[in-house]
Length: 341
Ligand code: TYM
Image 1 (spheres, helix red, strand yellow):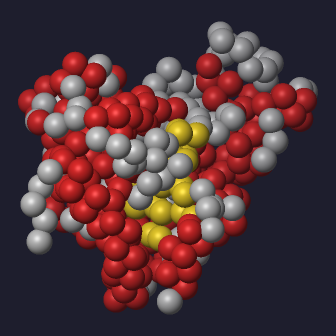
Image 2: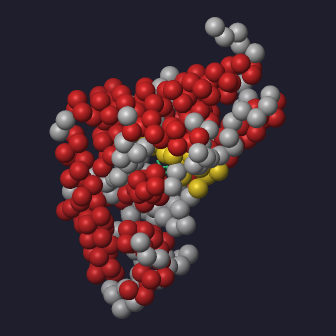
Image 3: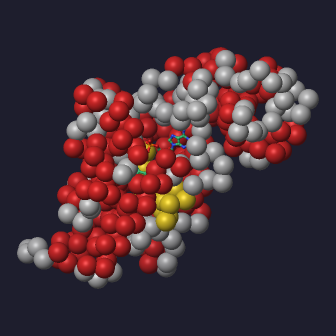
């Protein structure tokens, strides 16, 4: 099977990439521009593993039917954005029990103080004070387990996950120092720009998938007319110049989105829209998004038409991932001193 080749290539010292996305809500243009758009092409250079982080999704309240639907949707979407399951190891996190096991072990090498400093925990606790559960607090340790199980060298993420990758590095270093080198210490990699896409209706807030953001959030699977409406309504300012600046967060965000969608830079986008009014500019950004997302949505719909095939791809990915994960996990159990059979 092709997936086995991925495992073998690693012995020839190709660097390994791991990243994941959680199936809460609907994946957004922020997820796509900040992280997912780069994942499809990485298998040319690296051995890549990508996962739907479903275990992470239950740290916030979620209905069983939504978890199921979101998980399948996201898995199909990852293929639709260009992750070829023949060239990458693509799997659902909960299908590989080693994630939960390593997470428990790593809890004991993670300090309460350092976990308490995670800004995402603080933000999410504020947003849902009635559900500040231990899983939400422990979430970055599970994320560290995801990465360390596969001895990943590189973790491509948006800006908001970098603090978690730093924590993962600290846990790996602590464990390696206490026992002996066990884990590859990974580096986080954020894109040069587009690492943080802001809401179209509030350009001070991240464009988030779980926050019920109304017209501020563009979803990857939105219909063209919805995408256009959201961009046309995007908040700007009372100036008239299409120029990036600290005082023009809405316009800066739109320029970043346009540059990221078209493969240009913010400066080239500024030049292109030098003489444009805001309405024209916003419509052009909307059109660029529609064109980029259209083939993704079409491929996604084809994939969703065959549930059995999708589950088959999940199973193949999980089998390969589980074998790799077991190797690391066994090493960890032995180093700590567990009796193994
Ligand atoms: P998640 O599901 O929130 O987001 C998935 C990826 O999208 C990026 N992202 C953004 N980038 C730019 N602008 C935005 N507005 C924006 N919103 C989200 C995120 O930075 C992320 O890269 N904990 C992770 C999932 C995870 C993971 C892992 C990631 C679980 N285990 C191991 C890397 C390695 C998360 O919640 O991402």
